[in-house]
Length: 262
Image (cartoon, rainbow, N blue to C red):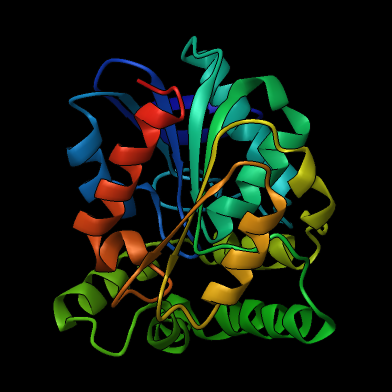
């Protein structure tokens, strides 16, 4: 499905019936990274999975994509679909977008699941690395980004089939999208001050072997969100939903009714 929103064409899936769930994908992937979650959730929920601007089948306009831009895109998508409130699941970059959505469109967020992400802003070193990677994408293409990133996205024990799936997802993205999102993530604000004010049910998920946003950061984040639930997934790296989908799905499906999303 496609919709023209905020001056760009946004591709999305909208399946199932019931309370709405919005799944926000990681960098540099697309909404299809959630296919195992869609299968598990669609029998109970209305599951909406957009390709964020610059990724998958959505347009990749030139320039920097702030997390606020992406949050406004998905808020407009929800309005387009007649959804007033949704449980929002964001992994990695999707978590950054979820924080922006919470700040800018608080009334649309019924519950939050923050997976393999962090509240803090980038360090100076982190911002420099994002710029290096943006230039790498522009100069050498998406395959160079895939080669650099995949070893850090999954645990060492991840299968070759999963690595091949990630390769295909990454190289299908536009270079403008990869570079624009990298530069947007680099300037995102620190969301740590927002954590104590999050007053919706919140689940924090982290892979035990996540080296990019490690478990100690997830623990610190959960400790600052009132009443939040923390789940650590053994054997998973940064993309815990793809590496250990059964465990990830079980965490969601057991938390959602307790969060009042049923």
